[in-house]
Image 1 (cartoon, rainbow, N blue to C red):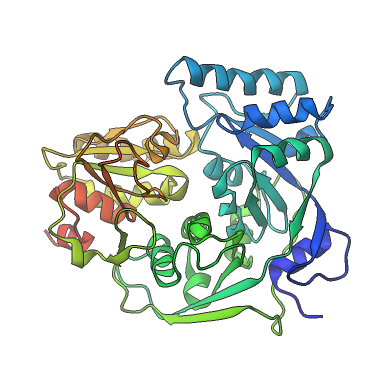
Image 2: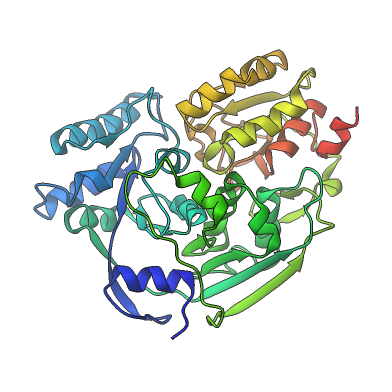
Length: 422
């Protein structure tokens, strides 16, 4: 029976020759992880279930990345719970500050999540790893705690939606714009409990950084997973990083999808999601009179070296608008090192931007960029709900690193071409 890539991966991990949407399966897990917000509850569930040792220390990660370096006593207590558990369980993949990065940038970079895997994480943006051709999804802390004991969990096999992107990308348009455009077309519940499969000539030409961005935000359309079939680009990324064996799966040509959307995006301009939903999307040229107080460049969505290079290309030799705060947050220590070696830190700081240690920080309203009432930010993060980055009377506009950098320079939401042409 023909199957999609998601169905093939779930079938292989549940010991079945085939699965169909709606089937309930118990799947073997290749990797399991949690962060400083979600792990403490998972650890309690693990202990309450009688857990003594995790199912496989090599396949478990604990990553304190949301409120670290610790912003207050409570966050210090949470981080200590991870640290103590990792020591007791002798987990090799505990990442202390200095080695820690934003989990969804760090794990692929370290070669710990791989093509063909089934991965769960106690964080909704676990779907990021679908960019590698893995079936990856976020779960609650209770499910994660149980999986720490068993190394398995159950799934209802999702229907798959296929999105085919044709045409040529315009200058300054990338993966962030493609996923915002997609969410704008189908809505925040348009893929509820579905697997979003991204394909077509445009996707095949995307670098891994843009693929990660697209799959990262599948959850913003309500999806169970986002996924891209692995190819030579994927292989070039994982070869040399992989800590274990991996396998490429691809959808059969005759695979059945619940729906197929096919778009020519040749004329697409940079996209922006307006408050207070990721589906409130329009072209950047429609928002050129919207002033901003803050720009954030980073996060698990756009904190990779490629994202920082794009921002730096616009900021080089220019200065941030006097009334704007621009915060740059590299995704991992390796991204920090590479940005430093390439002179990007100097560009950012000469432009009056500030560079943070890796952290989720402002994305969830944690710290390192909280908004006051009446303030407005343009951000490369993934959510712009009411109060997401601070006060309930603040506003967040979601955009690419290029739009965020251009906007920081102009002091209002701006098309990157407006700045680049100066």
